[in-house]
Amino acid sequence: MTATPQRVPIPRNGVDYRGKVVLAPMVRSGECPSRLLALKYGADLVWGPETIDKALIGTTRHVNAVTGTVDFTRYSSNGAKNPAINAEQRESVIYRLHPEREGKRLIYQIGTSNPETAVQAAKMVAPDVAGIDVNAGCPKPFSTSGGMGAALLKTPEILCAILRALVTEVGEPNEIGISVKIRILETADETEKLVRSLCATGITGLTVHCRTTPMRPRERAIRDQLKMVANICREAGVACLMNGDVTSRDEALDLVSEFDCDGAMIATAAETNPSVFRRTSEGAKAPWQEVVKEYVKTSMEVENRWGNTKFLLGQMIPGKDQAYQAMTHTKGYTELVKGLGYADEMLELAQKVDKALEIGEYDKPKLTKSQRKAMNKAAKPSGQQQPGKKELKKTAAGIKRTAEMAELDMPPDIARDSAPASVSEQASALAV
Image (cartoon, rainbow, N blue to C red; front, side, top):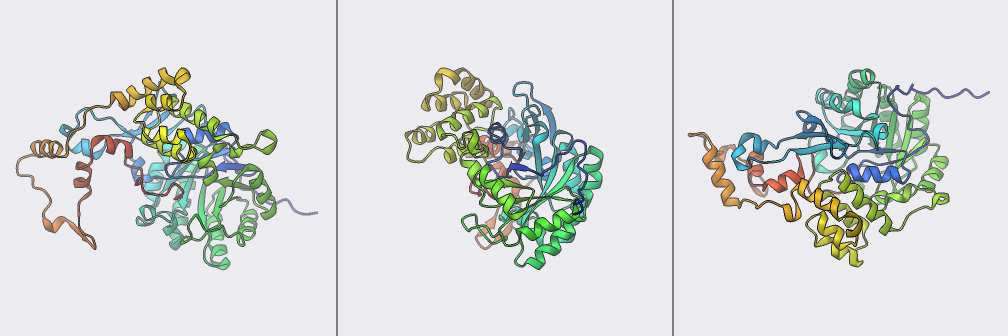
């Protein structure tokens, strides 16, 4: 008789990744309404977008009675240093989750390069999620430049230290699982050595993105190391998910069977149409018109940041369709539901959300750049000087402003839309 493979015990408040087809972590494309829609269409689990540990540290946890969400918020450092610039500024939402609608099917992905800050941040969100996943696969500079993401693949001792700390100080006390998402390395031997080390840290799951760090999303996934990774995970009792060029639930299940994995992640295809999580027998992928309408409704229900909603609609609506043109010219939810023909059903809710978010017709007049600088100068204590030339960093492109200077030059509405944990609007949505 063949011995039954061992399995790392799944903690009481955690979740087993085996047999699951899940939403991959995607910057800007994995916010609350996107996750809720993926779950509605059949995703078994959802990963939130990578959120940097230092961005979460110092936030305040609020239960939002209007949206039913749990919000981790903070005031921008701009307002904290100089409230006169925007005395009525709103708190920035760093992370938002819906306990009733996603509950224990949400995995929080953390961006980190340090065991201490990783633990500090993870402790804050651990009671509200089913697991903590460490991002060790993002190849983008906003992550790797801080030693996070794929940079951790070059410092496996630090990555393992982070995972061990999370397992003992966060996972065990909260009875949730700790996992990691990696990319394959240049050779099978390198990948094997890494995976064995990671599986020995006490994690319950490992996701392998079947691309190397230098590869871009347009390049086909490489799956020749996948069976080897899956076998190592199975020997250690760790669940193994695959990621890369998975376009539907049916395809995911076929690939899981072919490569002997435990589950699969869907990324790009779900960004465009989250109904890809449905089986063919359940109707398969729904028309984009149906999905877009549901997404708009869901976004308003959780008062999603307008810039994020508009970005996602740009991925969901075909560029040549009239609806795309109508959407691009809108400045709030009220204009959006009118432009897309949803006013009869959603106008009242749209107006309410616009008012709450202070967008559209409720948008407050913005200070000019010169007005902000004048107010900032007037509010500074006497004798305080602007950073001198010696304090400014020089780059190949010339003088680089300090973080404080850049933030003070940013209009309050833009700063609020971006939020401290967010990445640049030019960053790829598939960064993680």
